Amino acid sequence: MSGAHGMLERDLIVERVKPGLWNARANGQTSWAAAQDSGHEKVAARRAQGVGWKRIATEIGVGVGTIYRVTLDGSKTREKDSGTAAGL
Image (tube, rainbow, N blue to C red; front, side, top):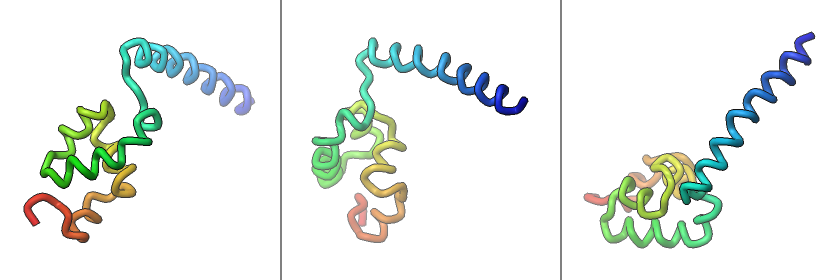
C-alpha cells in the first residue's frame, strides 16, 4: 500500500516540476550546466576584479548559491582561508 502512495507522490512532483522547467526555458533562464563551460573562468576573473558574488550570479544568470557551490565546493570559508577574498 505504501508503494502505491510513493508512486502517486512521485507523479504529483513530476506534474509540478515539468511545467516549471518549461516556463523557465520559455523565459530564457538557463541552468548552471549550460553556463558551466565558461562560468568558472568568468567567475574567477570577475572575483579578481573585486566584483561581488551577487553581481556575478546575475551576470551569468544563476543563483548565488549555485556560484558558491560550484566554484568553492559549497564553502565561502575556503575563499577566506586561501586569502583570495576581497579585502584580504
